[in-house]
Length: 317
Image 1: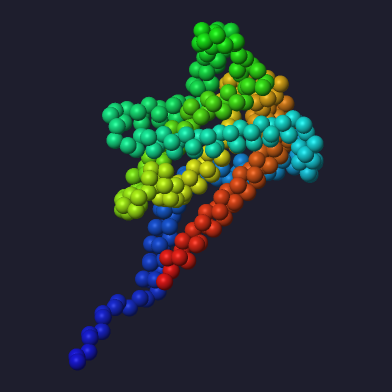
Image 2 (image 1 turned 180 degrees about the vertical axis):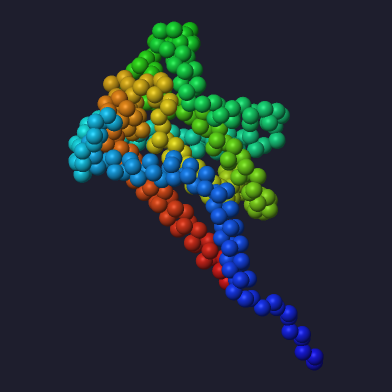
């Protein structure tokens, strides 16, 4: 068998190697010139504020006079602050109500809208439109509707023979009314995501289950819901993060009232930093929320990994 010819290569002397290194440095400089604006934006708007607020949480700072290092005093004060405890309680109640209800309503609407019915495209659009409306606009709209004296809601209740309600001005109702407003707008996202996930459910599994005599409830329980479990985990994490960070709707409608019944953590942080001018104290509260979100993300990731592990082992030969 004839030998293959040896490939021709040009000898690389010192000048050629230096030219190659200069060209590579020039390419790297050009690449950095293109990405540097984005890097500066990320550093200026993300990394530096995070580091600065962390340092601020260990200081007494009113945003006007020079700050003073106080160590963990801000965190100790949070532990003993009844207003912070009330804000945490309100946030937990809001999250516990909003997250499962939004996911359940979204799944129910997706199952209905996944069927072949007349004007289904219009119905899907109508259910999603509230999601794209800003929380500020929602707050203004429902502030007029739920006004205890001149609102349309009490007018309807009056015609039905029901006594007028305080809604956003009643400490026993305000938080639940905010949950209802958020459900009106936030359920659309869950509906759209579940609709997309339902399109990917393996139809052969559904047909096989039907041939085995499975009814509609058995199909939902044993075929559809297991196929939607990754989407459900994502929505659970996403909706929880959104609920823990609710602010603008509270700011527009109740401003934390009445009697602190709707003061949530983010509104508490804003109030401490920009109303009471205790920026260090507000930064400490913000990092408590950040740690809670981090723990939540880690737990969700661990649960998702645990759910995937048995499937992987079962699929292995």
